[in-house]
Image (cartoon, rainbow, N blue to C red; front, side, top):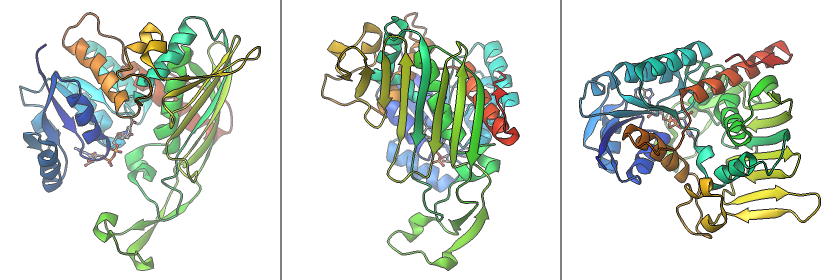
Length: 382
Ligand SMILES: NC(=O)c1ccc[n+]([C@@H]2O[C@H](COP(=O)([O-])OP(=O)(O)OC[C@H]3O[C@@H](n4cnc5c(N)ncnc54)[C@H](O)[C@@H]3O)[C@@H](O)[C@H]2O)c1
């Protein structure tokens, strides 16, 4: 297979995670890293052994050897950067959210269709082997009709009033923090597994800390020193760090989920439970190698990830034997494999979430925010 050359934009948390996942594919070479800060980007590129460094993505887009670009920047620049990538004739793998408004995400769907380029959004949780197994169970009719979906996505990294991040800044994050960051994953995963679409929502968003204390300097610079009151500035926060949401699906099924960035002890607690007419399915993605199957007439089951026990469709996503865990770093790898096989022209390439899925997620978040403001059920307008 020919080697496909790629650039990654973003040197924070997820950019380097993309680099690692791409390298595990074996037929992709990350030739360039793009960041805003020259010294930081050069340092990261040296650490990751990436040959070229750009501090302006527009210059990188003129590089003829780059065929694919991963957009791992902050939310506020997803729309202009994704637009520029497609206009430069390069395939685009975007982080979620695809954009911060549906006006933008709808335009991106149209542009991608016109350009005829591969477009993907990193809804990585679909690509855990047991997410695929849950989907295979639903697709085989073994769960029956979906009655209801419940769950939550809870984290604790904004628990203290001295915790601060760009995700709480409306200008950078968009119209929501917790719902956009976490709720978008929950909704995408549940829709993927059930094959059902969320069409109506009723959201109740909350800002736990309306004023937070933001460190005036990088906390890394202060590592090992205790910060005192004079090291912080007060910042008003209007975005949600908690939300409860009721949802209705296109088959009439009901659902509810909570999202939180202020739940002590919950690191990445993405939990769903699906009530079907024949059985129930459930998972907590902090325990990604276990799928719960609930029964009324016999004992419940916990399926431990083991390729020999999975449906054929799901087995394509399990690369290690039973007892050898697979999880967070494997999701993007599986997603990228499918997208890059399509880029390579492989007719057997499996599906991956596209800009249409990204747009649907933006539309759901927009509807939840609007419904919370209006205090009433709101239709998801795609
Ligand atoms: N799918 C997932 O599981 C997942 C996980 C984490 C983050 N994300 C998404 O990835 C994105 C980045 O999140 P993060 O946690 O890595 O944030 P981060 O703050 O750690 O990194 C963001 C990076 O974007 C860069 N950036 C911003 N504007 C830029 C520009 N104009 N040109 C080049 N680089 C620019 C910043 O310099 C920084 O390196 C977010 O949109 C987030 O929602 C997705």
